[in-house]
Image 1 (cartoon, helix red, strand yellow):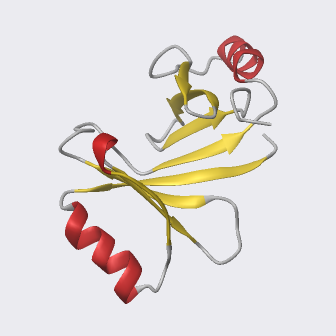
Image 2: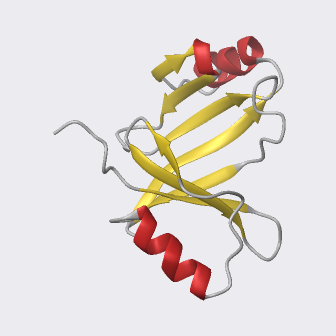
Length: 119
């Protein structure tokens, strides 16, 4: 695990959530993808963002922390050998690959790489 990637939080009402994070907390929008139900907020000058996910689209959404790794497939294989049970096979995202799993207490975590990012 190299660093934090993003923090994902579920939102039952995106309009209320966006207003709260922007107007109450004073965070600026990093990106907004209405078509896939996600809005990201910058936290200071940090690269990792808080990404709200619309629970109407992501019904099983739980708060999730993603970490960056060099290669998702390699890290996936290493973690499988250590007994980690993933929620799915690794999947493609806009910037590369990702995979999610839960720790022994039910907290959702994920790994991602930037293998598909524009250079």
